[in-house]
Length: 264
Image (cartoon, rainbow, N blue to C red; front, top):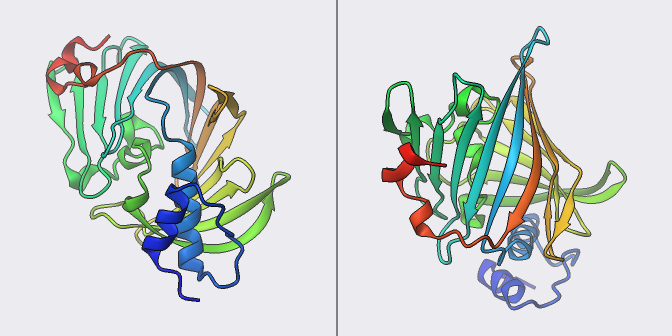
C-alpha cells in the first residue's frame, strides 16, 4: 500500500487514529507522521510567558548565571513569534532577542545590544552561531515547524524508562549548522526527550536533554529543564524554566522589532 505524504498529513490533521507501526509505511512516511502528530498536540496554546535561569559552564567547570524571560505568540498559518529579554547580570541586562519563525525559508531574527544602543538583524548565514554566548545556536531557539525538516524513523527504543520513537530530522532550509538531528520522542505523550545534533562534517556536536515535564492547560507538556552539552568544546548550557503562564493576552504589538529597545 503506497501511502502518500499528503494522505498521512490529512489523516493526522483530521484526528484519525493512524497506525504508526503499520508495516506498510516506509521509514520516511512514519517519521513524518510522528512529526505531524507531535506538532498537532502542541497547537492551540495561543501564547505564554516564562522565566528562566541560564547556567553556562566552560570546560574547566567555571559557571556563570543569567536571568531571562521568554514570551511566545502562536501565529496561525506561520511559525511562532518569540521574544527573549535578559534581566541579569548587569553586563547583559536589557539585551533582547526577537524571532519570527517561518515554516519555509529563513526566519527573521533581531538582537538588541544595549551597549551599542542598536538593533542588529541576524543574517541567515549566522543562524548557526551561538545564542548570546551559550551552547544553543540561534536556530535552536526557534519553534520547530514541521516543514523545516525531512524525516526518517530509525527505530523504537526505550530511553530513561520510556518507550520512544527515534527519528532523524534533516534541515530543509539553507545555512543550517547541522547535517541532521536525531530526536527521541516518547510514544505516549509525544514529548521530546533528547536531541543529538550533528555538525556539517556529520560528527556528533551537541546533545540536548529535557527533564521535569509538567502539564499545562490539561494538554500541553513543557519541561522544567533543558541541558545542552557540546561534545567538541566541553562546554554546556542549562536552562531552568519556571513561572509558565498561558493565554496572557499577548498579540502582534508585543513582538515588534522597533520596540526591542523598550522591551520589558
